[in-house]
Length: 399
Image (tube, rainbow, N blue to C red; front, side):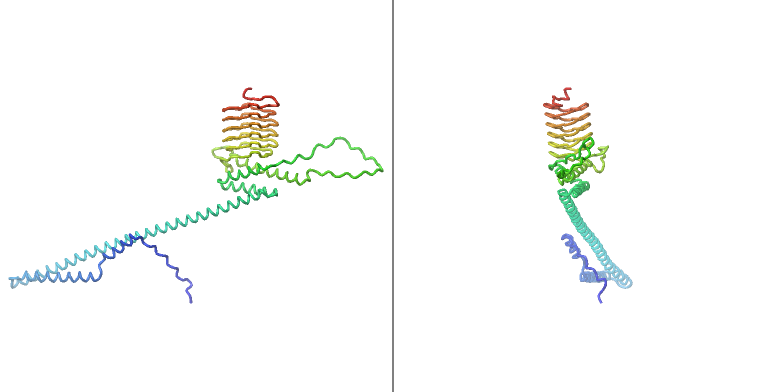
């Protein structure tokens, strides 16, 4: 019948360091063996007997009677005292040796315990490092898988899947601050893809009253139905892509708005983010009250209105060759770095009221339909060479 609780294997002994083992061997060599103890006892007995004999002989020389008895007793006492004293000395020595051995043994035990504790602490620290490394690797793998899956969804032909990939990237960036710039770069790259918005469908109907049909025996050929633009798959796909792009723009705006207090921004704010929307097609772009680093909108096309009110560009902001098909609102914007609008086209109203240009501003060869720079501050240089408003030369600094 087997034991239900077999004894566990003993823990492996931790080897003592070489110096400690040497001390243990030296302490054991200093200990008295039983043979040495027997030799010492025989020597003490012989010494005592010799002392008694010598004193007995010396004390009784030339004495007789009562003096002889007294002298012999004294000699015997002295001899026994010498023997007892020798034994006491040996006992004291043995006690000292035993005490010293005990202290050495305790010291060795303490050293061994300290060594075991060091080994245990080193082992625990190593296991902790291995556990942290394993956990970090697992987290990195999970993050990579989420990122790759989201990017894959963003390239899907189905708009709903692209929506899901966009919000998956947003979650990855929100939970991992080190990946926020990478996610923003991916979203900007998506918006930089070529895109043509769907045309506006539907128009004003013809006015007037339809004439009643005249009866006629003449049979007219049936008219071929004209397909509606809404029924076109291409129009439908472009309309869905428009919604995905609007969602991508909202993600950028939502996470670049710090809130009312820049010192304690809201939790969803992503700091130190740069934007590269060069050549992008942006639809009804609303980017007010945002805080961004360097931003590039060179060659971008703003379909509909574009609002940047109260936004702070901490780095350079470049809108060279940008086309604003609708109203462009830059009121209260702060350009900390340089601001470039060279060869920009403003098809409708361009509002720069109260805008602060803390560095150089370039508006060379820009085309304005209607511009308002009232209250704008130009701390650095302001270049409007070749700029026109409704065909005429335009320079608000000289006005």
